Length: 335
Image 1 (tube, rainbow, N blue to C red):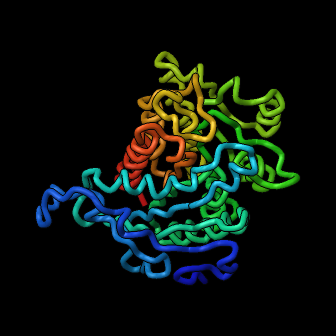
Image 2: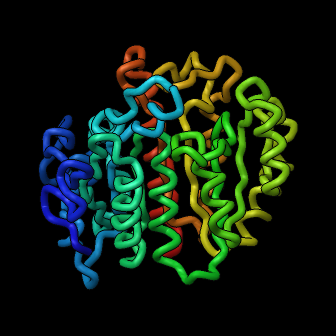
């Protein structure tokens, strides 16, 4: 991989690769010797992507995507580029609950400059590809939901061309808009489905009031499987679990993506497009637990955490808990 330490071959004017500031991985210390008292900031190691060795790889890699150019293009409220930093700082003091021999690497960030979204997505894909080829679980901290396209590019590049990818999206929106003029945070899934015949898309949490009839029609045209927010109820939970299981079992690789605007605005105000009828955290947690526990799930991204619009850090903290939930299950799964 031809990444330079502080910038990428495409040029510093478009995309930059940076290592995470150590200050983002700081927090309370209860002990410096008793690992059962450790917190994440005492165990996560910052390792440049080129230095992650094939013979002694960590079990999971975290990468940030500092970008909300896709949100800007989609006429949303920008600020999600600040998400990776805020999520790391919130994750830092959570307790280390894994075996001592497990290792999590923070491999840095892709920073989108001068509106170069497409270049940034490709470079994110290169990092995801490296992590997956080294059999590492992958956590991507967005960024706007355009993060997902870079995540997908890396997963596809790490797999055989005929491998069947199942994308599970927890989201209030289909993100199936036209990309004829330019890609945005509202186009990724249409891009993928029209460019890759070996991908299927299952989205949970769709809002009737957040998607036009045209988008529902496009979802049907592209054979998108979806569940409306209003149907994600306790009574329907057994059916949902069964549907998710069947979908995951039918694919070689499962990619999970979470857009935080799927949550009720009362618990997640810091997003580009708040949802008054959004989901409750416990329901989202249940979906994350099931999906990241499946042996074919190896990567997860979280998007649309906007600290600039957050109230008392509620969205950031909730997002960090979701990331930790995903990590917990991914690291207990298969390779």
